[in-house]
Length: 538
Image (cartoon, rainbow, N blue to C red):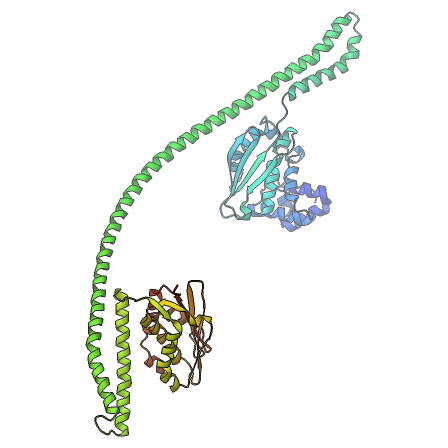
C-alpha cells in the first residue's frame, strides 16, 4: 500500500491498527472492509454508516481486544491523527465550549446520527445520541463514540473525561445517553505558567545582564525579581479573564435555558388547559352515556327478575299440578302389579313395570324442579338441629340398597371416631345430600363395584364426608361443570336416561346453605371422590 489511508473516519482506525499490528494488520483490515486502495487513499471519500460501524467489529477481530473501539476513540485526540480538527477544537478555548458546540457540529456532519445536549455545566455534560433512518447501532461503534467524547479534554492537555453510559441503543434502548465529566485546568494555571516563564527568562539572561557594569547590583536585583512578577501577574490576568469568560458563557447559557424552559412551561400549561377542557367535555359525555346505560341495565334487570319470578311460579305451579295425577298413576300401577285388579299376563306386567319406572323418573324430576325453584327463590328454610351423622348414613344406605343390589354394588363405610359425632344440619336435607351423592355413585359404578363412605376431620368446626366410587370417572374438561344445572358429563345414553341433571346442582346448593363446601376429585376410567364439609354441633 503506497499511500496513507486518508478516507474520512477510517484513517484513525488504520493508524491505530498499524501502531498495534504493523502494516500486515492494516492490509488484513483493508481486505476485510472490502474497499479498494483508490477509495481509501482519497480524503474526500466517506464511508457509509453501515461500513462505518462494521469497521470497529473488524478492528476488534484483528486486534483481539474488545476495548479496541474505545481506545481508537481516545487515540483520535492525538493532533497527529486529527490534523486541522485539532487546531479547530483547541481554538474553542476549553472543553466546555467544545461540548457546547457538539450538537451543532455533529448534526451538520452526520445524517445518520442525531445528537442532543441534555445538560451542560462547567465540568459535566449529558449527551443524547440517536441513530436514525433505519440504521443499526452496534456496541463497537458506541464504544468508539464514547472514546471520542472522552478524548475531548485531551486537546488542552487535560486528562481524558470520565464517561458513564446510562443507556445504549445497541442494547435495545431508544437512544444512547452518556454522562461525561472532566477535570478543568486548575485555578491559577496561567499565573503559575507566567511565574515559571519569568524565572526561566531570568536564568537565560542572568549572565548577559552581569556583563553590563553600568547597571549597579541593586538595579540588576530589581530587574531579576520584577520579570517573574510581571509574568505571574500577566498570567493572573489571563486566568481571571478566562474564568470571567467561562462564567459569563455558563450564565448566559443558563439564562437562555431558563427562558426556554419558561416558554415551554407556558406552552405546556396552555396545552394542559385545553386538554382539561376537552377532557371535562368527554367525561360529561361519557357520564351521560353511562347513566343512560345504567338506566337501561336497571330496567333490563327488573324485567329479568320479573321473568325469573314468573318462571319459578310457573315451575312450582305446574309441578304441584303434575304430582297429583302422577301419584294416582303410580298407585294404580302398583295395585295392578300386586294383583289387586286381577291376574295379568307377562306382557302386561312388562308394560306396567315400564310405566312405573317412567312414572318414578317423572316424580324425581318434578321433585328436583321444585327443590331448585325453592332454592333459587330463597323459599327453602332449613331447620338446624343436632343430627347423628351415623344414623343418616345408615338410613340412606338401607333406602338405596335395592338399587345397589341390582348392580351387585357393595357399600363400605369407615368406622372411626367421627361416626359418633353430631353435626349441625337439617336432617331431611342432609339425608337428601347423601342420597343424591350415593345414587350418583351407583349410576356411574360398574357392576360388582364398591362404594366407600369416609368421614374425617376438616378442622375444629367442620367434618368432611366423602363418597368414593371406582366407576367411570369424569373427563377433565367436565369436572368444573358437574355442579351446573342439567349438565351431564358422560356420553353413556343409559346413564343419561337415569338422571335429571339436577341432583348435583341441588346437592351443591344444600351443602352451601349449611355453610359447607363441596368438590370433586376424579380421573376418567378410575372413579370419582365427591367430598363436602358440614359444621359440627357444639
